[in-house]
Length: 302
Image (cartoon, rainbow, N blue to C red):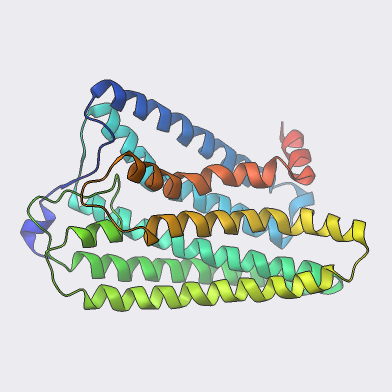
């Protein structure tokens, strides 16, 4: 990275040129951020309850912590820029956003894979659940998830910022992400970042295949159960996880399959918000409001 690159700011996408709308946008996202933060922190607190010490709640607590970190990478900067009527981010700040966004996304899909394996053991090997999903095993899986996520964060950050950027440095996004930075890059050859992208896609594909196989075995086992027990198992154990995975896949596909526009419009801004804000905001609703054990633990804390 050359010295002149480090001293240059990037210009982020703005929703509107109107200062009044920018202030309204800032307070709206401040409200969303606080609600999401509070919801995920409540999940982390409720899992302290001795009744919620299974591996599922262990991974759920870590997923909630991940979402607190994930939404804190982009939304506070958006709020600050909206209220101060600025649209800039420093070079180090942009590097940090890319690193943490990629790291948390890689860790997220790893934890979702671990949750699918937990569901598989809970339904298909119920009698051996405590033996298979021991605390030490869960800690090892979690450490590996964060390690892989951080590794991808380093690789993507290095691959992206080893490129040269155009003088305008107008990022067609309200935060720094890899597709938008590649869009404004003046480098014709993206061999390094494309190689890293293939590695990331391979890892993501492996995780999704693992999740798919887990649920094939789960559904085969569930179909052999009596109807009422079958429905109880599916809705109490699997349904929240299905919704979280679906949210992850839909938001990521919406953000990264769609080509980066030259001149972002309101729709592009909403898609970006959908990707970066939706999963952390939905997580407390998916797991807390429909889970009786979580509700009971919450009222015990109160």
